[in-house]
Each structure stands twice: as structure tokens, then as C-alpha cells.
Amino acid sequence: MEKVTLQAYTLERCQQFWQNYEADPDMMDGSFSYDKNWVEDYWQSKCHESNRRYFAVCINEIVIGEVQLKSIDPVKKSAVLSIHLNQNSYKNRGFGTEALRQMCDYGFHELKLRKIFADCLHRNQRSRHVLEKLDFQHLRSDDTFHYFVLEK
Image: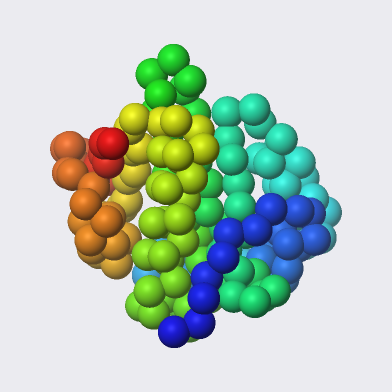
């Protein structure tokens, strides 16, 4: 299997992610149209927040996704995990699982977190399966989401 690495999420990598983005029909209604200025605004607004750590998910130098820990709370030692792969061809191949595993390791070891939360839409069975495979424990569900936690 090709090796997945987490790289600094630069503006260039963010542009590459969205230039190659294909909307997942199972997750999104409608289509996506690349807009360089929208991506720059997105990157500026997301990647400079002090309570968020963003990385590009790469195979060699190709950006296939973005992964983040957001809502980082240094007092509670917790954060919320999120991943987004940019094409269906990268899904169901273990890339997302490995990226999430690396991000959790980063959160527990580098950020000294004790809890990492995650959620997924009911219809996103793929994400639920990956979270359970990584030993996230189901906390609860509401009308839209399943909520999980991984504790160190």
C-alpha cells in the first residue's frame, strides 16, 4: 500500500486539494466548482485559528485529503477530529484510516490531549466504520449525527 503522510497545510496544498475535489454524491447535494479566491479565503479562515491544527493528507506529494483537530481545549485536553478526502477513488483503500491514526497520535503525543471527539452523519457508514476500527467509542446519536470519543 502507498504510504500516507501528514504535511503542513500550506495555501498551495489547500489549492491542490480543492482543484482536484470531486463532490461525493453520497454526502453532498449538487456539485462543486473550483474557485481560487474561495479557497484562499477558506484557508485563511480555517488554518490560522489557534485552536485548530490542519494537515494535508498526502501520498508522495499528491494531496488527497485534509485532516484536522479543531476546537482544541487545552484545559479539558480535548479536541474534535475531522477528515475530508477529495475523491472517491481514495476512499475504501485505508488512506483515511491511516491519516486519522496519525492525527490521533499527534493529538495525544504532541498536543497532550486526553480525549479526541469525532462525529459522522448517519448516512456516512464509511466514517463510522473507520472510527470504530480506531477504537472510538460511540457516545450518542441524534437525528443527524453519531458522536464518538477516543480516550488516552
